[in-house]
Image 1 (cartoon, helix red, strand yellow):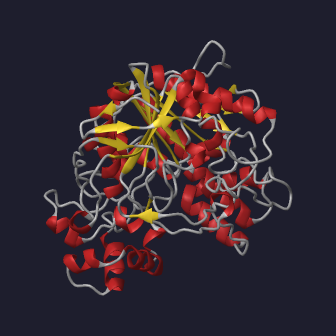
Image 2: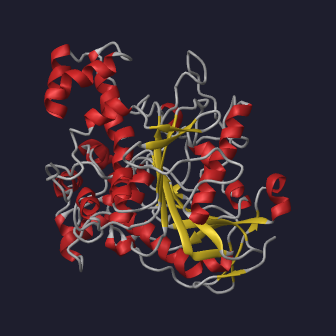
Length: 513
């Protein structure tokens, strides 16, 4: 049993972390800590409110329920079983050696397209990171339309004329909780790193651009998704999609909208295709302008940044249009890069043999490999220490978020999915021994490297250490990139010729000659 921890809202008692791996280092875990009041009733679709204080000692030994989301999702490694969900879900979890002090803090934002996921998935267990002298915080945040619905009614009632982005506001509230309380858990409130994957990484990028989050974190890690691409050409505020969803619910005022059940809102979201576009919107308050404009102007958080992607991000994540014709591919590439279209097609034709596969590979690289390099370029341009990686080590494929049923049958074996989107998660958290199937010793070794890279960066802003292969800082002369393979090695850029052509589609600065 742990010691009692005093927070601004009251006392907590957690428990020891996994004894098998943590006993010697006194790692303790506190689960289900409220960082905001339940966003229900009149608080639905509003900025989070500080948690109410409690009397006595609150038990912090059980995770909270997950935020409202579809369950029984069946998609490749992201398949999820059935689990309890609730609107009352704004809770976080802390792993720490509470006997220590002034430890660097890492705050994790899970992925899931801002429509699914939870911070307490087994793959995110923080024991291994805490053993490296880190205080790890994972959070749940509002998802889907309950977390990101934008509608004129909501803007009208807002003091800031803002609607949407409640899930981002939840993350900001969690960081405010960290600032106020983390020293009680042995953490350093002045050394906080935010990190996330996929939608969580897009949140990291967006929080760097948000004036509301400034000063709440000091370093950032983005894994496999950013938010520095071109702004949407229409519905920037998300009102059109929001109005379609509300119309589907057949209500004529905000009070009636708040009376709808979560199940009704999920159904309306699915029927109207609400989630087919970005959940994050430009609301004028959390995000005053498109993120790319903030980064172009240098108004984002100027902090050390570590980021990257994997070799086969698009596998099973984005559909392949096998019906695409040669002419349609040519039209797509011409619209993308103009006269360079034939050069781009030739680059990808060396690997892919159909128009559909070429388009799929181009679109994937545009979003991932190029998108992460562009984010790194903005960071480096404004003088921040920046570290770029590319993981082409192929992990086994398994149900990442279904630990009781990890088996995933692939006709050509567990590693035939390539270095897939989310394949880095078990490595980063040091949990290759804890989740999944068919791991090799090379996997465990790479995980040890990655845990040290990530935690070294959180500690000092530099991932390097005396026992690690050297990671060169990113620069726009060589595009130095750490290739995460069996033994990590630094290389001068990844997919360089392809990404250089793709950069035509998205100039770094609009007026750049």
